[in-house]
Image (tube, rainbow, N blue to C red; front, side, top):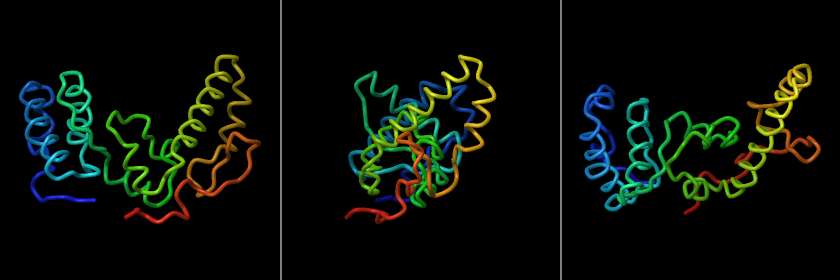
Length: 175
């Protein structure tokens, strides 16, 4: 993981997202994302405030639509810390909300089973939606009493067997 002081902050507050969108996009893509991806070759942009996260995330998606795609994972300090501590990337960290390219970062962090974990999450969401669609609210309530979000062990779709967390025994970073 690399960083260069002063190059990764968006640096103009949150209001610009509403008042100066074109400037924000141009600046974020050309002066920030391009430099971060091509010159610094960063694996991740770690943010602290929602304005930076939103700007870096959404402008990658917008840039891709305009042929200016500079993929770099973007996540808050809390999300990154949770991943490093072994949290489930989808149940706890909620990477399904992200539109930036986080998969290479997961691989580099040693979370090589992210596809399996994503499928597990998607299957769980389908199951919950089906219970809700059928009006089985008592079963849904029971499911959530048993469904483990925060322990280092999670219940899986293969018979609800206990399993170690996604990253508990893996080295933090591959070299």
